[in-house]
Image (cartoon, rainbow over all chains, first blue to last red; front, top):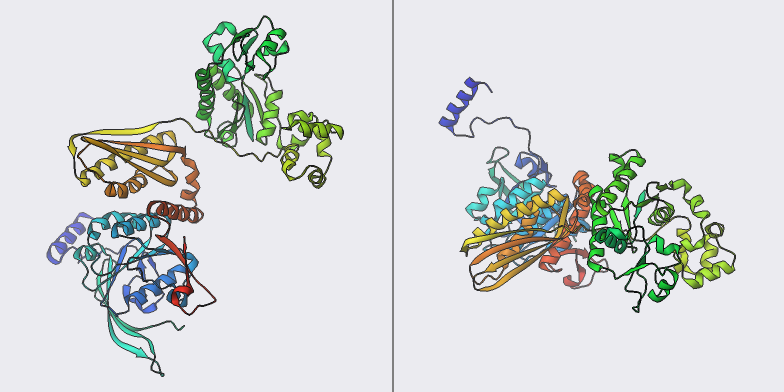
Length: 225
Length: 396
């Protein structure tokens, strides 16, 4: 970059902020979520590799269903792990989503610290996709663990997806490269009156890899037994 | 290919190193001639007079009245044995020990890259051993430990015997069956059948041999063709890798302790890298002021070398350690050392290595947190009415 161009960039950054003149960097690698609407929404084609993504929303907004669909898609490509802090993962539900259960490791740690240690070890060992199901009110101490963890995740080129309640801590938001907020707009009922899925409205709250602020709405179907 | 390096019994070498005047004279080790005991080792000069290992000392004196009788210096013998193995270990980490303390095996496959000319390689091995022990070894090279040891038995110092893989059967055929590790009954039986040379064994089929002698002796049959199924017992170099740091003033907060532990892990890692080793076990000793030291043992599923991995093993245990007083000293000691190269294929071939690494990671987590922490789920096809019964949880 020439001196004059560098000077111009500095002027623009001073006036409009450091993100205003954006270099056209190589596209970030992404892992497809298995949901085309979500892949389009992220702007990079799925969950970013080597980074932390955050999936937030109130109860019943479909964040776990969506996360488990992503897990199912990732399990068809490589090894996956689910850090089940609440201890309520339903493998039967996952199997209905065509999850390769033989490639799934379910980790049930006693504490958040144990969970983070497991993520570090598994990521470095070569697990491609790790989901952390973080129950509300159990995020204390996560901000101290995350810098250590994210370094390993980046090194191992692992995709880390954190499922968290709507009001996530500042530290978690800060470390996430992509933050997606979900809201349920309607239930989807079948002709027989049975619940078939839900309509979700998704907003990209934060995105370090593509322009944030995008919105989309789609139907998340529940798998049929 | 495998080389067998054979020296006189280490107790003899130790005696010669202690008293050089004993060289070239009939020397019998095991005790004084008037003591009750057996011959532990005898020099070639004594053997020429009929002395054999295991013979009573009194009888040995009758065969060799001029011989010098000495007790075995166990410590010096062990040092000589270690010295032989350590000398070979400097050439290659592929060194294995044998039941016979005067023998050691070397894997030559990697050494061939450094010494394409086998005669130069064997000369280098001979020079190294002669320099360390003061005796020239006999070297045999073969496709297995057994063949190389038999070849070393026929070799003389300075003129190694090399048995190429394709010539193994022919080389062994000419030898008597005594070279095979047979017990007396089997040897007698084979001789009754007229099988006095290995060629005789080679001429009968494996199935016929099995019918006659059973499955247990099939290993002997395989040895007759040079196939040695014994486990390679790698020599572990007695390297001591330990770092310690006095803490002045004593510290009482975990943040500082982690910082120091990380620095020590860096130093341990540097030492391991220097020796080309990995550790499977790390011991952290935390010296406390006016209290017993806290000892933390960390085990790794595979030989670990890098500081990050070492620290990742230490950190959770440090955080859980029950420390009751300010710490005045921290010591890290790496144990269960192994050649680090065993991990390299995993580093070079990403996918192939990963499958193994995940298994290692699971083993490590289960060791650390218990088998129930990391599990695999299976949905049972014969669905039971209760959801809990439909899912089969298994430790990963």
